[in-house]
Image (cartoon, rainbow, N blue to C red; front, side):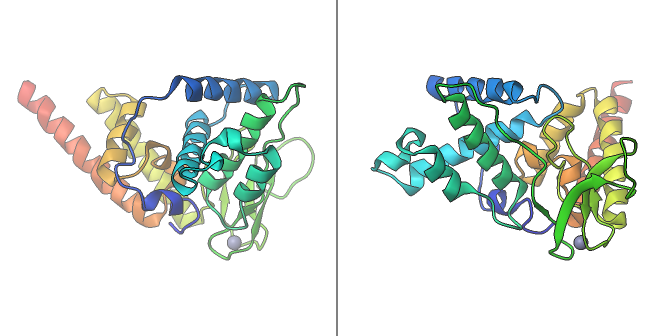
Length: 249
Ligand SMILES: [Zn+2]
């Protein structure tokens, strides 16, 4: 995994600490979600990433502009804050969600209803640092065939997308990484089923063990080393669940 999607998270400790959400922030989050739906994205999108991105921006403003009116989102104009947050080439997926969540926030506050433009995004291939485009995975044209984000330099890196907002599922993956991600998905499915926890709780448990935010432990967001760590932890958890079962018999 490169800086593509871990940079902003890697430096934080206690990433899964849950703090109570202030009522005003809760209301803004509801408005952001309504704005997302009004903009045509009603299903198949990663809400926890919008939520995480928006709260992350609020936290950054609070610490970076302490004691000034800019420490609050209400102290900014739409253009001013979006200009500051606009992701540059190569910045992380979280940066894209931070930008979009703020865009949705300001649009939701507009006196006149406006639709927010979401994906597809400008995205970067972290193998060759080239651009990645949203297009047919097999290069065909027309309405049939699967789409995704594909490296423009033809280095065989690709990743799927959320059909609702056309945002990538994670960073681009070459064949080796795609195979590893498939293995991770199979193992976590086994663990979720075998432990009786279900997938959401299983991922939560792995996030804690890997010291990652729960939004970053999704299979499509893991790099090679993280996949290997994910696989060995999942196999260890499966064994523990199996031993526990045997002991109960
Ligand atoms: Zn590439």
